Image 1 (tube, one colour):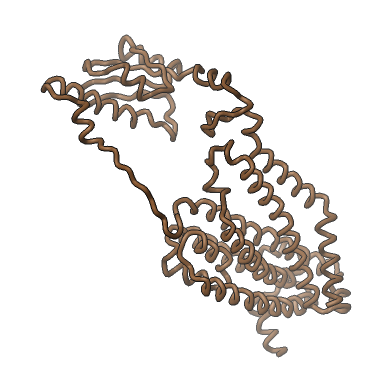
Image 2: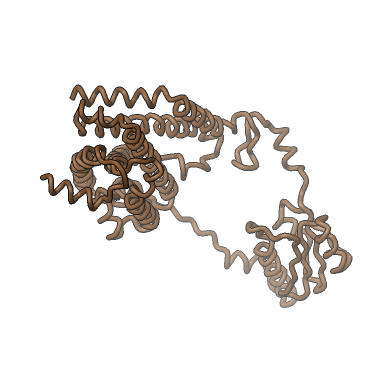
Length: 417
């Protein structure tokens, strides 16, 4: 234990005295918190829908009277009602063009955003210079054309359009009673947390592998393995990496989540799907995310010991990376079906429970015993992986030259046993 604590203390010192590590943490904390405090100091009412105290009524008036986009139309069928278009396109200024050529010329010169040539009661042509992916003009104008047709039809046949519309457009009131989880509302923060834990595993796992390989390449490892046990070395490195990762990610996530809670009203709750995370989900994320990190970190350390040069690390960890990537994509795909058989099986496997179990907690139905059993399996697997990793670590650190294949390393361990 004493040797383990010495290694742990040394590795922690490497993290917390690293100016890049601490500086990056501080910068990300400040930027994350500052971004979420913006609505208190900058008028973002156009984006959030909430009037900023900083902007006051004056900025709201300015926004209402701001410049509108110009839209043109040519009515060859005599069906267009300009007042209807004004109501359906509140952010646009409508003008009738003299003819099709002048409309086309204005759009080509980018004097007008777009133009519509109505050629029949239910037909029109749409002119636009560059059509954006978010262009909804035709969808709205379709509804306007349908309304024009109904108005003309009712006038011709002596019908009351308002009476007919009230019959078809009966307002329906629904009161939802969600008895367990709202998967739709919880989907996006689960998506984000899966990405976070994936990045945590890959980033810090690579750091551990590089650290081991560097010690091996400069022969420092020969002194270390003779002065302390391989268990103390690998466990010290991995636990220190876990503490460093939890410290960095905890500060960043904590600053972001806390800043959003403080400014949630100013944001109008629009980021709830990402940042309004229930406590039980955060708790399960912390336990399973940390468990998944430890599980893979021991393997990354062992993989780093199987090579003698840092440029060979990518070859050594490629198989491990494939497993992580497959689990990552399967986890994201199965978020749409958290009560399905696939994600239930994945939530008990140590290679994937770090992301799938907390997703089930957030979005599906999961019994308490399932959470306990899954975590116990993960904990036992961490210990087993740690012991196996320590053996690979000791065997690999004293072998130099070409990278050692994982199959060869396992055969060597069986032969020693």
